[in-house]
Length: 153
Image (cartoon, rainbow, N blue to C red; front, side):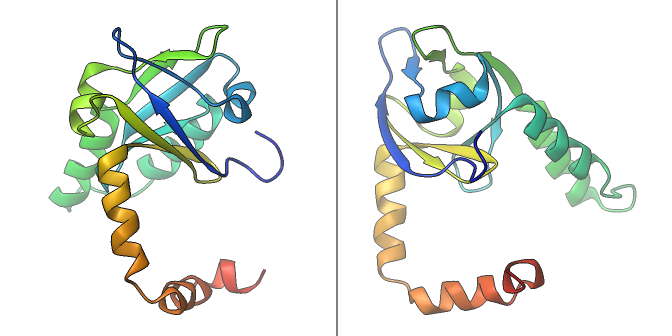
């Protein structure tokens, strides 16, 4: 991943064997392997191995002994996590369970989210985009700017 991280939006298609081509601009960052897990919005997250290890360590550090919802969320994220290989042609076999979770049958949208890539069913993603188009953009940016780490930039 370069200094600015993953960014941009790309279309892909699953082939008959359940493989997708990772966009060239993302491919080198993964160095032939990635870690995927489910995302909270119905997409699949794809991390570089080292970024996933950092994410997992942060998640694991959250105390959950007294909170069954936190334990369930961590269990869900970790149990759905799996390594994937990216071959020399840039193809990745998309695990069936991950495809089923995200309702991915054929058409895919990949979205760069700095430290990870979101993988969406294209129809689901396009519906989300329509919903966002009806939202107040200034409200979204106000929410972002209220975060101290973003606001100080």
